[in-house]
Length: 291
Image 1 (cartoon, one colour):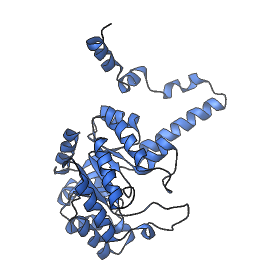
Image 2 (tube, rainbow, N blue to C red):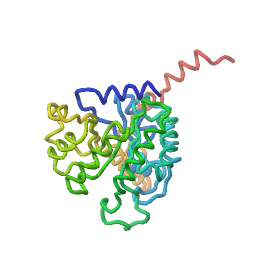
Image 3 (cartoon, rainbow, N blue to C red):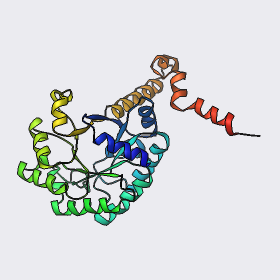
Image 4 (tube, rainbow, N blue to C red):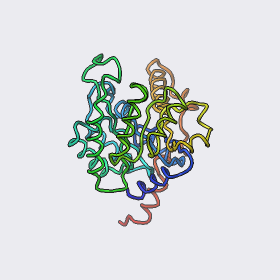
């Protein structure tokens, strides 16, 4: 676990921006690992959808669900795992337990946001109304940093302030979060594009993780390096494609379609064996099993 965390720290120190694979369960993480992705991002929303079949917009899951999922991912994928821990599971004391549990599950970085999950559907018209005070979030981030048993675990301060608050208030939050022990800032949106990234960079000396990076910036390596944009999050195309594939295949079969008609859309036997590590387990069996 420490090796993965140390590797993640080396990624944050690079002069280049590293994309994170958008995964949602152990299977998707295993495939990302096979393909050579160094970093995987487990989003809170799709983690809940894929593993519990519950929506993200009301609190129908808990931190124990997330910890169990992270443990199962870490068991099968040798990657640096960034876990979206939402608001951390409660107040600052709850967050301390969350951090220790996620550490034990093998997570490299723990993302804690300054928003709350709505208590009911339609209970909020905007993320702004869900934002907790700067002071409360500072306390939560300080508690998260203090709770680490492994100093290589990275606490990521996620803030939607740039999209929800006046610029001066947003930058004030970023500055405050940068002095809590958090070691990266996550921006879930950059409404003003380059201007938001430059402003965030000037407000903190921490590396930035950005979701929804504007297309004109994706290949602008000089700009990204100059503004310490170290991790790029890619949304959730893998989850959306998986849902469509499952829906389409089950609908085809329910409508009376022949399974054979789906053959050319399925993974090959070789790919399935590679994903489930058949050959690796056979080698272990030959080496260690004695009857």
